[in-house]
Amino acid sequence: MERMQHTIKQKFSYTGIGLHTGQNVTITCYPLPPKQGIIFKRIDLDGEPEIKADVDNITSTNRCTTIGSQEADINTVEHFLSVINILEIDNLLVEIDANEPPVTDGSGKVFYDLFMEAGIAEQYAAKEIYQLDEAIYVKEGDQYLTVLPDEDFKISYTFVGDHESIPDQFFEYNAAQENYQELVAPARTFGFAHEVEKLQKAGLALGGSLDNAVLVDDDGPINKLRFEDEFARHKVLDLIGDMMLAPSFKGHIIAVRSGHTLNSKLAKKLKKKLLGRN
Image (cartoon, rainbow, N blue to C red; front, side, top):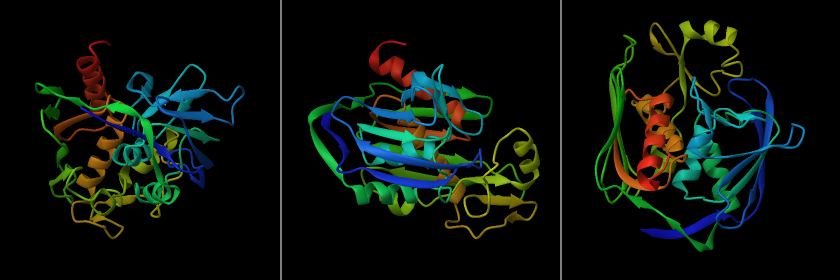
Protein backbone atom coordinates (compact mmCIF):
# COMPACT_ATOMS: atom_id res chain seq x y z
CA MET A 1 0.00 0.00 0.00
CA GLU A 2 1.04 3.63 -0.46
CA ARG A 3 0.46 7.11 0.91
CA MET A 4 1.85 10.51 -0.05
CA GLN A 5 5.17 11.63 1.44
CA HIS A 6 5.42 14.55 3.88
CA THR A 7 7.84 17.20 5.09
CA ILE A 8 7.36 20.32 7.24
CA LYS A 9 5.99 23.61 5.92
CA GLN A 10 8.61 25.83 7.56
CA LYS A 11 11.83 25.51 9.51
CA PHE A 12 11.98 25.72 13.30
CA SER A 13 14.64 25.69 16.01
CA TYR A 14 14.72 24.55 19.61
CA THR A 15 17.43 24.78 22.29
CA GLY A 16 17.64 22.61 25.40
CA ILE A 17 19.85 20.28 27.42
CA GLY A 18 20.99 16.82 26.36
CA LEU A 19 19.90 14.00 28.67
CA HIS A 20 23.18 12.08 28.71
CA THR A 21 25.76 14.79 27.92
CA GLY A 22 24.23 17.55 30.03
CA GLN A 23 25.28 20.02 27.32
CA ASN A 24 23.12 22.71 25.74
CA VAL A 25 22.16 21.79 22.19
CA THR A 26 20.20 23.48 19.41
CA ILE A 27 18.37 21.65 16.66
CA THR A 28 17.03 23.35 13.54
CA CYS A 29 14.69 21.41 11.27
CA TYR A 30 14.28 22.21 7.57
CA PRO A 31 11.93 20.87 4.88
CA LEU A 32 13.45 18.50 2.33
CA PRO A 33 12.25 17.40 -1.12
CA PRO A 34 10.70 13.94 -1.56
CA LYS A 35 12.73 10.73 -1.31
CA GLN A 36 15.44 12.27 0.89
CA GLY A 37 14.61 10.67 4.24
CA ILE A 38 15.42 11.97 7.72
CA ILE A 39 18.95 13.39 7.76
CA PHE A 40 20.87 14.66 10.80
CA LYS A 41 23.75 17.08 10.17
CA ARG A 42 26.39 17.68 12.88
CA ILE A 43 27.11 21.36 12.27
CA ASP A 44 29.49 21.48 15.26
CA LEU A 45 32.02 19.21 13.53
CA ASP A 46 34.44 19.80 10.67
CA GLY A 47 32.86 18.90 7.38
CA GLU A 48 29.38 18.89 8.95
CA PRO A 49 28.89 15.12 8.53
CA GLU A 50 25.40 13.82 7.78
CA ILE A 51 23.75 10.72 9.22
CA LYS A 52 20.61 9.21 7.79
CA ALA A 53 17.97 7.81 10.15
CA ASP A 54 18.18 4.16 9.11
CA VAL A 55 18.53 0.91 11.01
CA ASP A 56 21.80 0.19 9.19
CA ASN A 57 23.29 3.24 10.90
CA ILE A 58 22.61 2.17 14.49
CA THR A 59 25.92 2.20 16.38
CA SER A 60 24.76 1.68 19.99
CA THR A 61 21.68 0.79 22.02
CA ASN A 62 23.15 1.37 25.48
CA ARG A 63 20.42 3.23 27.41
CA CYS A 64 19.32 4.98 24.20
CA THR A 65 19.40 4.54 20.44
CA THR A 66 22.46 5.97 18.72
CA ILE A 67 22.91 6.33 14.97
CA GLY A 68 26.18 7.27 13.37
CA SER A 69 28.94 6.95 10.81
CA GLN A 70 32.73 6.92 10.91
CA GLU A 71 32.65 10.70 11.29
CA ALA A 72 29.97 11.26 13.95
CA ASP A 73 27.20 9.90 16.15
CA ILE A 74 23.80 11.14 17.26
CA ASN A 75 22.59 9.75 20.60
CA THR A 76 19.09 9.49 22.08
CA VAL A 77 17.18 9.91 18.82
CA GLU A 78 14.19 7.78 19.86
CA HIS A 79 11.89 10.47 21.32
CA PHE A 80 12.39 12.77 18.34
CA LEU A 81 11.91 9.93 15.84
CA SER A 82 8.80 8.71 17.65
CA VAL A 83 7.03 11.98 16.90
CA ILE A 84 8.26 11.97 13.29
CA ASN A 85 6.99 8.42 12.82
CA ILE A 86 3.50 9.18 14.11
CA LEU A 87 3.22 12.40 12.09
CA GLU A 88 4.39 10.52 8.99
CA ILE A 89 7.19 12.97 8.23
CA ASP A 90 9.41 11.35 5.61
CA ASN A 91 11.82 14.07 4.53
CA LEU A 92 13.58 16.35 6.99
CA LEU A 93 17.00 17.93 7.56
CA VAL A 94 17.93 18.22 11.23
CA GLU A 95 20.91 20.45 11.93
CA ILE A 96 22.31 19.77 15.40
CA ASP A 97 25.28 21.32 17.21
CA ALA A 98 25.99 18.48 19.67
CA ASN A 99 25.77 14.70 19.75
CA GLU A 100 22.17 14.33 20.97
CA PRO A 101 18.87 16.20 20.63
CA PRO A 102 17.51 18.15 23.61
CA VAL A 103 15.71 15.92 26.13
CA THR A 104 12.99 18.59 26.62
CA ASP A 105 10.80 17.27 29.48
CA GLY A 106 11.79 13.65 28.87
CA SER A 107 8.81 12.93 26.64
CA GLY A 108 7.73 13.57 23.05
CA LYS A 109 5.30 16.37 23.85
CA VAL A 110 7.56 19.36 23.10
CA PHE A 111 8.69 17.93 19.75
CA TYR A 112 5.09 17.08 18.82
CA ASP A 113 3.98 20.66 19.50
CA LEU A 114 6.93 22.09 17.54
CA PHE A 115 6.15 19.99 14.47
CA MET A 116 2.47 20.87 14.62
CA GLU A 117 3.35 24.58 14.83
CA ALA A 118 5.66 24.24 11.82
CA GLY A 119 2.92 22.43 9.88
CA ILE A 120 3.02 19.25 7.83
CA ALA A 121 3.18 19.52 4.02
CA GLU A 122 2.06 16.76 1.66
CA GLN A 123 4.46 16.07 -1.20
CA TYR A 124 3.85 14.77 -4.71
CA ALA A 125 5.62 11.47 -4.26
CA ALA A 126 4.40 8.12 -2.98
CA LYS A 127 5.61 6.39 0.19
CA GLU A 128 5.53 2.59 0.27
CA ILE A 129 3.92 1.14 3.41
CA TYR A 130 4.66 -2.55 3.76
CA GLN A 131 2.19 -5.20 4.88
CA LEU A 132 3.43 -8.28 6.71
CA ASP A 133 2.33 -11.67 5.42
CA GLU A 134 3.61 -13.61 8.43
CA ALA A 135 4.69 -13.08 12.03
CA ILE A 136 8.21 -11.83 12.73
CA TYR A 137 9.74 -12.19 16.18
CA VAL A 138 12.92 -11.68 18.14
CA LYS A 139 13.78 -12.58 21.72
CA GLU A 140 16.64 -12.17 24.13
CA GLY A 141 16.48 -13.74 27.57
CA ASP A 142 13.10 -12.80 29.03
CA GLN A 143 12.51 -10.01 26.49
CA TYR A 144 10.19 -10.65 23.56
CA LEU A 145 9.06 -8.76 20.46
CA THR A 146 6.62 -10.10 17.89
CA VAL A 147 4.99 -8.37 14.92
CA LEU A 148 1.78 -9.86 13.58
CA PRO A 149 0.11 -8.96 10.27
CA ASP A 150 -2.46 -6.20 10.80
CA GLU A 151 -4.12 -3.44 8.79
CA ASP A 152 -3.09 -0.83 11.41
CA PHE A 153 0.10 0.06 13.28
CA LYS A 154 -0.49 -1.17 16.83
CA ILE A 155 1.62 -1.84 19.90
CA SER A 156 0.72 -3.93 22.96
CA TYR A 157 3.42 -3.48 25.62
CA THR A 158 3.88 -5.36 28.88
CA PHE A 159 6.21 -3.63 31.32
CA VAL A 160 7.43 -5.95 34.06
CA GLY A 161 8.24 -4.02 37.22
CA ASP A 162 11.32 -5.76 38.61
CA HIS A 163 11.51 -2.99 41.21
CA GLU A 164 9.34 -3.90 44.22
CA SER A 165 7.72 -0.46 44.32
CA ILE A 166 6.62 -0.58 40.66
CA PRO A 167 3.77 -2.87 39.62
CA ASP A 168 3.61 -4.56 36.25
CA GLN A 169 2.01 -2.34 33.60
CA PHE A 170 0.27 -2.95 30.29
CA PHE A 171 -0.50 -0.36 27.61
CA GLU A 172 -1.91 -0.76 24.12
CA TYR A 173 -1.89 1.84 21.36
CA ASN A 174 -3.43 1.87 17.89
CA ALA A 175 -2.04 4.70 15.75
CA ALA A 176 -5.07 4.68 13.44
CA GLN A 177 -7.63 5.06 16.20
CA GLU A 178 -6.03 6.75 19.21
CA ASN A 179 -4.52 10.15 19.97
CA TYR A 180 -0.72 10.00 20.29
CA GLN A 181 -0.58 13.61 21.46
CA GLU A 182 -2.69 12.83 24.55
CA LEU A 183 -1.96 9.17 25.26
CA VAL A 184 1.71 8.63 24.38
CA ALA A 185 3.62 11.88 23.77
CA PRO A 186 3.51 13.14 27.41
CA ALA A 187 4.95 9.90 28.87
CA ARG A 188 8.42 10.63 30.27
CA THR A 189 11.61 8.64 30.41
CA PHE A 190 12.48 7.20 33.81
CA GLY A 191 15.43 6.03 35.86
CA PHE A 192 16.31 4.53 39.21
CA ALA A 193 18.05 6.41 42.01
CA HIS A 194 20.46 3.55 42.75
CA GLU A 195 21.74 3.69 39.16
CA VAL A 196 22.40 7.42 38.92
CA GLU A 197 25.97 7.44 40.27
CA LYS A 198 26.99 4.48 38.11
CA LEU A 199 25.46 6.04 35.00
CA GLN A 200 27.12 9.39 35.56
CA LYS A 201 30.52 7.75 36.10
CA ALA A 202 29.97 6.14 32.69
CA GLY A 203 29.24 9.56 31.17
CA LEU A 204 25.48 8.98 30.97
CA ALA A 205 22.46 10.83 32.42
CA LEU A 206 24.60 13.93 33.07
CA GLY A 207 21.67 16.15 32.11
CA GLY A 208 19.01 14.15 33.91
CA SER A 209 16.84 15.87 36.51
CA LEU A 210 13.33 15.80 37.92
CA ASP A 211 12.44 18.27 35.18
CA ASN A 212 13.10 15.75 32.40
CA ALA A 213 12.75 12.27 33.90
CA VAL A 214 10.79 10.28 36.45
CA LEU A 215 13.13 9.18 39.23
CA VAL A 216 12.35 6.03 41.19
CA ASP A 217 13.76 5.31 44.66
CA ASP A 218 13.08 2.49 47.12
CA ASP A 219 9.61 3.87 47.85
CA GLY A 220 8.59 4.36 44.22
CA PRO A 221 8.47 7.37 41.86
CA ILE A 222 9.65 10.64 43.42
CA ASN A 223 7.86 12.76 40.79
CA LYS A 224 4.11 12.83 40.37
CA LEU A 225 3.24 10.51 37.48
CA ARG A 226 1.28 11.76 34.49
CA PHE A 227 -0.31 8.33 34.03
CA GLU A 228 -0.57 5.32 36.34
CA ASP A 229 1.07 3.31 33.55
CA GLU A 230 3.50 6.01 32.44
CA PHE A 231 6.45 3.62 32.20
CA ALA A 232 4.64 1.30 29.79
CA ARG A 233 3.48 4.30 27.75
CA HIS A 234 7.04 5.63 27.51
CA LYS A 235 8.26 2.24 26.36
CA VAL A 236 5.66 2.45 23.58
CA LEU A 237 6.93 5.94 22.71
CA ASP A 238 10.49 4.57 22.48
CA LEU A 239 9.39 1.61 20.38
CA ILE A 240 7.60 3.85 17.90
CA GLY A 241 10.80 5.90 17.59
CA ASP A 242 13.01 2.86 17.09
CA MET A 243 10.65 1.49 14.42
CA MET A 244 11.12 4.74 12.48
CA LEU A 245 14.53 3.31 11.56
CA ALA A 246 12.89 0.34 9.80
CA PRO A 247 10.93 0.46 6.52
CA SER A 248 7.41 1.83 7.13
CA PHE A 249 4.98 -0.98 7.84
CA LYS A 250 1.59 -1.90 9.25
CA GLY A 251 1.51 -4.57 11.92
CA HIS A 252 0.66 -5.39 15.51
CA ILE A 253 3.73 -5.35 17.76
CA ILE A 254 3.47 -7.38 20.94
CA ALA A 255 6.27 -6.50 23.34
CA VAL A 256 7.32 -7.88 26.71
CA ARG A 257 10.16 -6.14 28.58
CA SER A 258 11.76 -4.98 25.32
CA GLY A 259 14.19 -2.07 25.15
CA HIS A 260 16.38 -0.41 22.55
CA THR A 261 18.62 -3.39 21.90
CA LEU A 262 15.78 -5.77 21.10
CA ASN A 263 13.92 -3.02 19.23
CA SER A 264 16.94 -2.58 16.96
CA LYS A 265 17.11 -6.31 16.29
CA LEU A 266 13.48 -6.29 15.23
CA ALA A 267 14.02 -3.25 13.01
CA LYS A 268 16.93 -4.99 11.26
CA LYS A 269 14.92 -8.17 10.80
CA LEU A 270 12.00 -6.19 9.40
CA LYS A 271 14.23 -4.45 6.86
CA LYS A 272 15.69 -7.76 5.71
CA LYS A 273 12.25 -9.33 5.43
CA LEU A 274 10.38 -6.41 3.85
CA LEU A 275 13.08 -5.29 1.43
CA GLY A 276 14.54 -8.73 0.78
CA ARG A 277 18.12 -7.74 1.66
CA ASN A 278 20.42 -7.14 4.60
